[in-house]
Length: 282
Image (cartoon, rainbow, N blue to C red; front, side, top):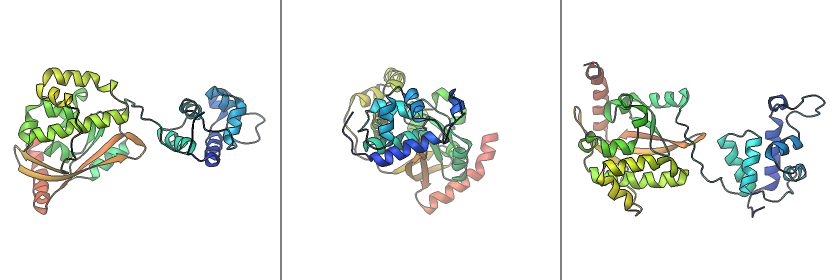
């Protein structure tokens, strides 16, 4: 057991609620002679490999604080989603679980619809390892055509250091690149994804001396100005105010939105998107 600042009573009620939602037949248990829906307490305990008596005490709010390992096993036994698992930890221990990076790079049609609705503002979704997994048309026209990049290569760091166009696009490439490296490092550590990015980091160190130098500099960068200034090779200069948002139910994803910084930028963006079809078909 461990110290807890959670809420034992609400924790127990949550366990009972999630247990009642499960179909016994789906787990190979008989559904006959059950007075209430869902799994029995001893069945959850069996799936979690813990004592039935202790699990009963947990549901009754008197079992003490379970360890992180036990909470993980209970979460798996109850088939909790990542959001439900986080709630379980908050109730049981008073804090969210430690990050465990999952290499799930898909997005739902709903998320793509959100991106598409943001046109004419460029918007994209990236993972904790800064791989870009979805984007809208405005991002394609004004930032990077990720659709023309092989899926395995769609990474912000790889574009920043290995694509010569990134240097042309950015007004102050070195300052932006240094901030990106620092923010990437923080996100990777927070997500527990250090091992997952080792190959990418090794590749960038081999291919880019500038990345290697910035990566070895472990100083935490100061917050970068939340304005992105670019000079588009066709449409000229633009200024964007950019913001990042957590994606509901997907703590591994970040939605990044680029809003025009001025009315003049907004007008230029609209004109660029109106002219883009001819350029894309040329």
